[in-house]
Length: 85
Image (cartoon, rainbow, N blue to C red; front, side, top):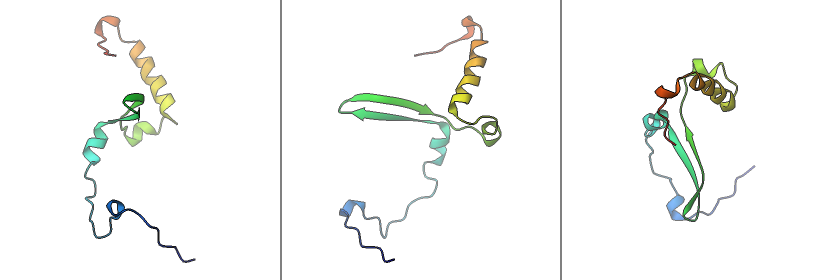
């Protein structure tokens, strides 16, 4: 099956360009935040952090990870908590 040539704007044509592998890998591993904007206001904001494979093996999804972390946090005395919201 022959692919038809897709017309695209010049700024999206990356032929002849060379990317840098892993350019943002270190920053991504430190964690990142995704913000969904609607005009000038933030509709949704979620923070993400990388976890190691050996830790990931114990949890099927982020809900389980958050549940485990909240259990640990609830055992920390109030006087030692410094959570900013």
